[in-house]
Length: 133
Image (cartoon, rainbow, N blue to C red; front, side):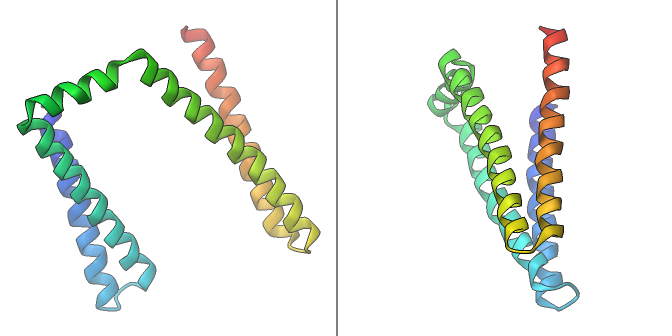
């Protein structure tokens, strides 16, 4: 059942991307949506290739399963996420100060609010995880 849902989501992603490309090329939507559609089709094609390879090649399937369940890889993934979060918040706050300094206060405020929202999301997630574990 889970395999079928994953395959359907990949196919749906490719179809939505194709529809966005068609709408962008026929000027129903602007070029932004056509570019987004192209990205969706490309990512969907890569996911479809990986899905097919996973279900056809047993050696590849075993390597993927081991890599997914390996404790070191889990630790590295979590560490990378934490660094990405820290750098995102710090970068956002630096950008908001720069925008304020060059006279773009409204944009600086938006970036600042987004950084604070990330910090709030981190705090809420921390509280939930702390109670769970």
